[in-house]
Length: 186
Image 1 (cartoon, one colour):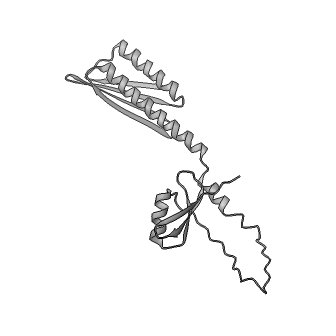
Image 2 (spheres, one colour):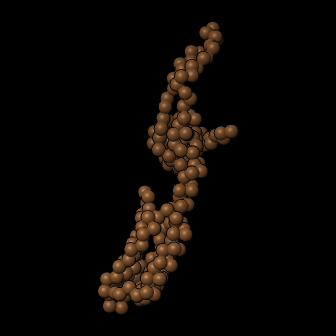
């Protein structure tokens, strides 16, 4: 990891140098994949500014802090960076547990190569036309789906639930009431 720092109207003492390296170690312990840490310390009258930029593959973090002491400004900026890293790692972890959109669409649409064979006795049963409609809609919450169903004046709406990432069915039961079906995939 490369650590660069500079001071504007401020001399970087050995104590500040040691504190910057200590904070860099704390950040690296939280996020080991970082390439570079840039620290800029500025002094303006009785106020100190600290800016930190952490760069890593495909992501970067930025924090800025203003206080009356240079060490507290540096600590505050480092804490902001650690908080951003924590949120980023939680977001990445949450993405791993959710089925990707492609897999949901693949579950809905069986392979095209498979033929659907339907035996129909033409004497008593009505004629069934085998059609397959494909959809790949953006994920909606149940409330958004209800609004869209009401606006479309259709009998039902098949949608991808934004919270569970599964296909749900919303249908109108009567005036202003809706039924909601959420399947369980075994």
